[in-house]
Amino acid sequence: MKVKMLSNPTICSHKYYNFICTTSLESHNIVTHLSPTKMKKKTCFLVLLLQIIATQAAISVGRVGVTIGGGGVWIGGGGGGGRSGNNSPTPAPSIASTRSLSNAYTALQAWKSAIKDDPLGIVTTWVGSNVCNYKGVFCANPEDDDNGESTTDQIVAGIDLNHANLQGTLVKELSLLTDITLLHLNSNRFTGTIPNTFRNLVSLTELDLSNNQFSGPFPYPTLQIPNLLYLDLRYNLFTGPIPQDLFNTKLDAIFLNNNQFSGQIPQNLGNSPASVINLANNNFNGDIPFSIGYMGPRLKEILLINNQLSGCIPQGIGIFSDLQVFDASFNSLMGHVPDSISCLTDIEILNLGHNKLSGVLPDLVCSLKSLVNLSVAYNFFSGFSQECGQLLLRNVGFDFSINCIPGREMQRPQPECSVIPGGGLSCLRIPSVKLLDCGALFATQDTTTSPSPSSP
Image (cartoon, one colour):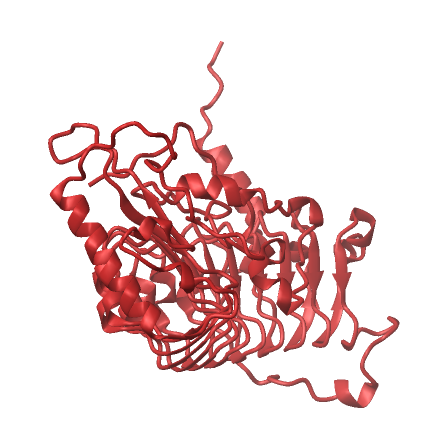
């Protein structure tokens, strides 16, 4: 069953890293690293309403509809088509539509009974069999029936209870909502775990459970939702390791930050087709998986901030990636900055601050043309090249404070620089007789692949 899609819809474009521009993180005082001109306004709410009733979400970096309904704006309550208030006769709904709405009624009434506190009176509107009139519930018309004929049937296409401050749990009956493509429960007080029956939400493409009080191990049923593309579990109380299967799904956006996940990041990280991965503010330890160097050009942003990661930054990072944001600050990474970072020609935010890195910051890194902000503060670097000294002239934010750079202000006292952490650490390097100069490498490739001039 297809859902009617309004003609030529658009989606607000923003970087995932700029979640400060949405309502979902405003209460957390997150400071974005990108310029304010890149933030989009909350008018994306309206165009998102058009998009959620599509059967497939074309999600890529900057093209995911998120944070609808912030500040008391609700889906439903008079929307959803077919309820215009005129007196013209309404065709009888099909058997399939009747069954779908009946299942939705069963699911929502079961859920209502599990909600123990509703200070805004949202679920008090969940009365009667017409679920399309429930606040927070959005209905839509299928595009056609099984015979290809137009229909005025309705289905529950999305639920938005963002910022409703509801207290309660999720119930297994929610799996009856097999037509919903979007379930947003951001900023409530839901507790407990995710029902195993969630795997039956076959149409769901976006699941936002962020900023609640869910707990327990990683909610594996979310990885069994067949068409899920956007998974947001931020700001909860999940614990333990994350499964390898997380990176074998087709998820385009993975937000696990601000939980209590622990253990090593699975070595198959590089298998993920995601455009953004946020693992910040957890308790991950061990090395950054070497496979990060082999993630394709889809990956735009990866955030590893404030974990317990150690070892080297993998040498291969950048060679097969079009990263725009790489933030591994506030860890215990050691060794030198890998040469292959110079291949990140699209990198805008490179934050390696608050680690134990050492050596000289090379020209190859500082000459990256797309840089907006480079931080290597609170490390043990012994110097930086002439190109790095020109960053300020390029209006690039460059923070090299609290290192071991002679003749520079705001550096570590000499005793702290006498013993470099990880001085004996041997990082795996790509075999090369000289520094990996991606600019030269690409120039060579262009020369090799460009046609030779025709002879006179």
